[in-house]
Image (tube, chains in turn blue, orange):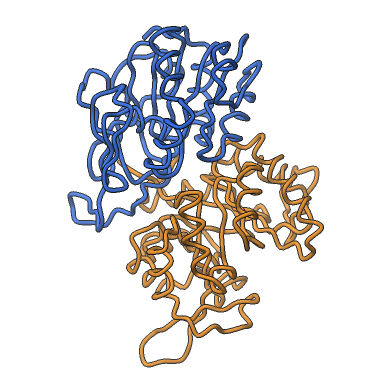
Length: 216
Length: 255
């Protein structure tokens, strides 16, 4: 696939896996950076993130990755893929760290699964939600191409996205509650799971991203 | 349908070579951790754990290169344990492509290290490894041992796991030193006691000799994931066979 994929690096976590998975599925050039000039030349952008939301938001703002993201989403209209905390940070607000205001690019809340968390039948559910869970594809989307509906992806998170505009939900997952595993709007796609760690299904999603023109 | 239970093959690696033998029929190099990881990935392993037992400090560079090589072609979670003593050790392994690190002895010497590591890198990548042995008492009681099960610490395993969860561990890797290498199955009472004591996921380890042992670890022990080495290394069972067998016993698996 021709072109450059920029993985936005705001210092939170290990981006090696994302970069090497992208190369594995045929990315010509992968750039890991927060430099606006470099990212300004990229053809598509990955917005990842791990760790606590307060630290992530502080770094996103300090390094002005929020402006960068707005630029690629709304000025340049190039394909953007948010991953894990990268997805969560797009929402209005998160319950984590006593409550943190996020980017509010997508209306909605990021909620905690809970302490002593239980399923409807009373059985205990561990938090973090860690491991392979099924994602139901709620819309047709180029990024789901070649991936079976209900395919398993690798998750690791204690907070989940609850999107206000339900028409933006692209995939849902069940863990005690139903939560938004993927959202899509125009040239933005964001996932709670880790495609770079989700074996064939994840690699297919990344491959689809490299070929996506940013249209739903 | 929901979250699947995980099967995690474990590689013991010394100076970049898998030890304890691996005996796949059609493998070219039975000691190459990259080739073996690739094989387990193809068989549907849910994660891979890489236990570095390299004694000398100088050879740890080899470990880093091995982790890099595995991470460059195996796209499932990779945990690296053994010799993780400082924040810098964690940083090096995560940068090499590990998704999680397992902290064992260093947590016992300095429990605050776990808190520091979780705050710095996030709980999702901090696994606390616990080696426990049953000790004399009126009711079943397990104590943490170090040095391959030779040195008692006086620390109660159940209390310790709860404390480690509170300090920010994202997962517990629990090994029964009574069962390790016996092929008699997991210590199910121990597994159950730890699983009931913490709200974070628990990986059961030590003693797997057949596929029922894996299923029992989940159904009776309550484990979220099961780790095994020899039953997979010697080609007795593939990971895929183990998963199908467990699914047949009613366990949710990624098939």
